[in-house]
Image (spheres, rainbow, N blue to C red):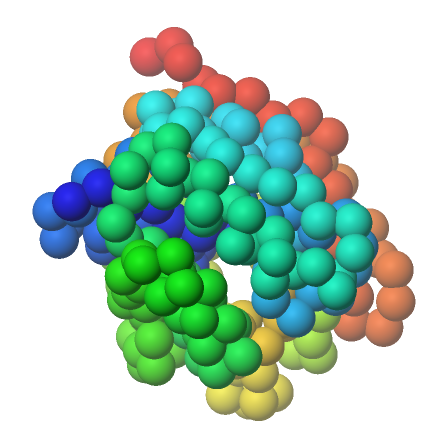
Length: 227
């Protein structure tokens, strides 16, 4: 059955994509919504050029809509899913939703209006177990931002290992933040995963913009197409 993933380029939507593939669905298109403003309640803010690299690595086409006004977030989702349903004949939508009822209900309402089935394979998943499963299944991701006390900035820009995941869980218990960052404590970007044909190489710099607010600014990103 043909399907799409609401794709942000981060660990959760990448996990949802791989879960759908392992369940036998034909993931024929990535669907991305890109807010041109900060602090969307529904969507992360992916960078188009990074999504395009992931699309090329996965060999799955990317369809996207940029949103200029937060009042039209649901309209944009309807337009995007309507487009991919028509162009790719999709029947199913996967999301990387973990805890947000607001996201899940709004995604479900739009999908049902279009006659699409929706799956949230991470919904209410144990957050500590999930973080460890990610790295155990060779989904390689880096942190692009940190917005919480207790998460050291040295995690930014580095591929999170199993030992790193254990440390993050330890810090989350000590400082009371969500270990999979569902509360916005951090943003992630996947540089490699089992379905990727090529690894994405990035370099950048860490900048501080406030108290416990750090960012990894990617200056360059390329596909490693050679052996």
